[in-house]
Each structure stands twice: as structure tokens, then as C-alpha cells.
Image (cartoon, rainbow, N blue to C red; front, side):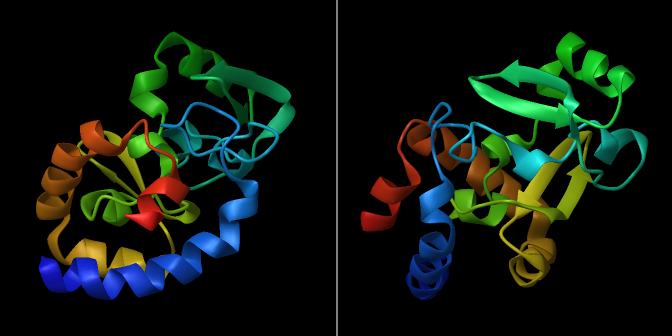
Length: 160
């Protein structure tokens, strides 16, 4: 795990700088842009109902943890409002692999997987391929790390 943390720091620095300007108006534990839009505007319910990411609309929105989630339909918005923890991405929409190494990297809505009824995002498809080599292990490690890092900004974590 030490090798992963060390080698991933260099990759992380470049990756975080790519999106640093767009982060963190919402709560520290939610990945949102400067306009408080979470999940890059994708509908979180669509991963469960359509089995794929679908862009949301400003016509259907809901607020959760001070972030704005967009939806592709009124039904999806209402389902989210009824049970946001069921549909909101794990680790606030940050990269699941990143959380496992105690970092907060942007989550790509197109690098996703639903595991045991929970939505996980990764930084990109390349990172997701690494994460897929041991999903249960990375989830376990991230679940242990998340309580320690959830309220710390991505920038602060990068400096550690």
C-alpha cells in the first residue's frame, strides 16, 4: 500500500490541479463545482434506473448537503428526495480509489460502478481499472479512511 500511496501522489498532484478551480463551494464532504453542482450535473438516480449515467436538467433539481443535484426527470428527483443516501455517490462523489489512499480526487461520472446498491466513481477509466482489481479491498480501505478525511478539503489533503 505504501508504494501505491507514494506513486499515486505524483499522479494526484497533476490530476487535482486539473480540477482544483472547480471545487468546493458545497460541504467539504461533497464534490461540487463553484456553482454547487454535484456529480458534474449527472442524474445520480439514472445509474440505478437506467443502468448508465444520464445528464440532468435544471428543470429538476434537489439540494443535498448544500450541493445541487440535477435530474433527468421529476420521478428521479422525487426518488432522490425520498432517500438521498440511497442514490448519492459514495465518498461525496470523490474518487473511490482516491479515498482509499486518503485523497479527494474528482469523480468522473463516466467512470462508475454500482456495488451492493451503492454508487462509486473514479477519477477516470485508467484509475477505475486499478480500482476494479480489488473492489472489496479498496472499498474497505476507503470506508476506514473516509471518516478521517471527509471534512478536510481536497487541497489540504494534497499537501499532506
